[in-house]
Each structure stands twice: as C-alpha cells, then as structure tokens.
Length: 205
Ligand code: 5GP
Image (tube, rainbow, N blue to C red; front, side, top):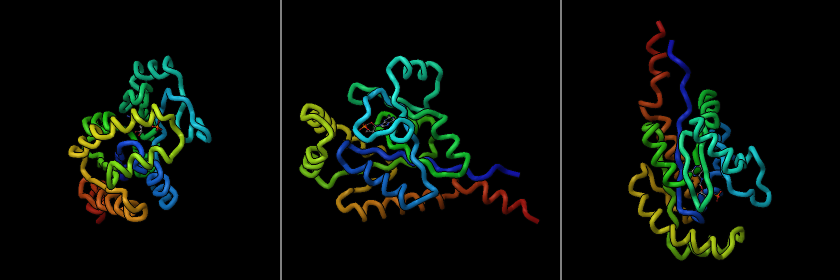
C-alpha cells in the first residue's frame, strides 16, 4: 500500500510591494486545503504581527544555531535580516495533505528548487515600475530609506522571473487570485502529484 498523497509545495516570490502578501492571505481565506509555511526571521515584528503566526521572531544567535542544526530547508539574508523556512514548518502540513505555500525571496526560491525539484514556483510581477513605487510608498510600514533600498533591488529581482515556472501579473487583485488558483489546480492534476492515487487505484481488485 502506498503512502497517502503529500501536499504540493508552491514557492511564491515577488519584488516587495507587488501585492504578494495580500494575494496569499486571500488565497488562505478562500481555501481551507492550503496553508502557508511560517518562517523564522531576525527582523523586528511590525505592528500587529504575532510570533508563531506571521513569523517565528528569533535573535541572530538562535537563527545561526538553527542553521548549524540544519533545521532549514532554505535560508537567506534579506535586507540585513535572516529569513528561513524550517523543515518542521512544512513537513507536518504536507504530511496532513495540505498544499503548502512558501512566501519567500528569490535566493530562497533557488535553494528550494534545488532540494525539491517538484516544487512549483510562481513569480508575481507588478504591472509597471510606477505602480510598484506607488504601492511601496502607500503601504506606510517602512521608512523612506528602506523603501528606496527595496525599489533599487526590485529591478534585479524581476530579472530573476525567467527562472520561475509561472508568472502572475498583479494588476487586478481578483484576476491575479484566479490565476494563482488555476496554477494550483493544474499542479494538483499533474501526473507526478498523483502517484499515490494511481497506485492505490491499481492495487484495487
Ligand atoms: P518582510 O520582512 O517584508 O516580511 O519580508 C521580506 C522578504 O523576505 C520578502 O520578500 C519575503 O518573501 C522574504 N521572506 C519571508 N520569509 C522568508 C523565508 O523563510 N525565506 C526566504 N528566503 N525569504 C523569506
């Protein structure tokens, strides 16, 4: 008897300000079979962020200890802070059959693709650089210095879009959400994602 079907892994990356977090939280609200992996980070919590829900907020010493213990599927330094996806944060969800979204940066996406070639990677693009600049400023969560840093990084991040499996342009939120759901559905229908089902079927008399 084969093991039950494990959930799929979806890597979702974007330049910051592209609406990735909004899109992912909408997906989670509308689909009970999709979960997001909670990352570890050394950055300070923003207003309203909770430990264990948005991130596991840890100090650099703890993060470095976790690196040494090989606790991370991937980790990267983003804007002077560490971010990482622990094996623990995804494995229990996958084993329960949930599809798991990794909302991570491009460096992390590359690492996950190397370790888990079946992971489906999606890059979200803004409709234009002007829209990206407006969104970053309007968000009001970061200092002008941080915003400038993010904007100058955006172009080089967007150049990496070529190495992702799917591209979603976030012009209209509803349309972008529908595009994401279509990708998730297509991934679930792939032959490679349905080995357990096929084997179970063949095992029947
Ligand atoms: P923020 O500080 O705005 O929450 O996230 C900054 C960037 O770090 C975003 O691009 C976000 O996707 C990325 N990020 C969040 N968690 C992880 C993670 O576990 N690994 C990697 N590589 N990047 C992450």
